[in-house]
Image 1 (cartoon, rainbow, N blue to C red):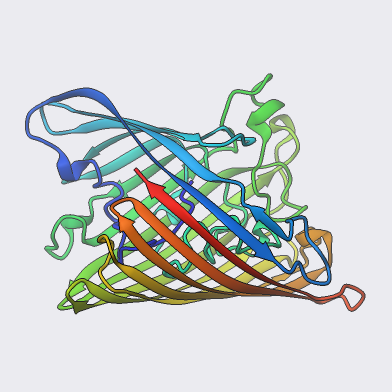
Image 2: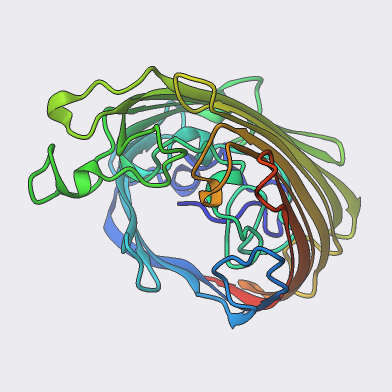
Length: 397
């Protein structure tokens, strides 16, 4: 699963996700091979823990965020690229294999992915520039989201890293744009929340696991999830622009597939923008935002929120570049009784300020501070506020 957004470059080519392999496709056949990549983040974090203390320690060398990626790729005589990817967690986690999928693509037609990976709304997302590597308003990491994943700008009920199919159009077939730019569409279909074989697949075991459930009424797993996303990437003189929109719908399943039915459909939609103004000599200013709206059961539970950010880079992602960024979000949830185990509704406000220094290609140091506040609708539940700081290093290889 993608865990950071827009670390140093203004526009990570999400429309080029399906073109990442095709961009280097060769006319002649290439035998199947494997390359290894990944990332590792280590940091030291402190927090004041607030009046209502959560389970993070006041000071800690945060749990490592690391993955090893095995990238499989071959090129057929006709230029079709066939490959796959397996992502191994770099520390002991409940889901030791993060993603595992196959793909087939042609640069002039599109790409198909089959396996456990993110659905298209998360793979094609554009929004807020990232202030602190490893943490963002969209993806929780070691420091910036002390109250859990319920307030993240991801879709809360969409079951990523489950077996499904993603289909992408080629991005450069529209508006005469260069490869990696233009309009791209993506579609996902997930029949159920299966990832690995359980001890009795289809009734018990890991096939029934629903990760990151949005609330207690969304039971165990999701079935018949349909998702669509679109982004448009283009350059206008010194300005690079990316627009993003997505939608999904799905049905919570009951405790076993044998009696599947569940409640009415859940679903949501998102939209986002990201702009980068290239000042010159490699320096640029990034500005972006994201809005999300989600209905999480058949009654009144829902989530909506916004995020925004601004970042300045002295020399892009080149060695010696210094970055300064600010990022924030406000998320409102209603009738979700399992957020931090409390309340029928709450509102979270999070702000982060970060500075980065690109030591060398693939080596990024960073430091940051932030503040998170949660206000509960129930008067008997005390509101809480956390202030935190972090310093660390990220390796991308």
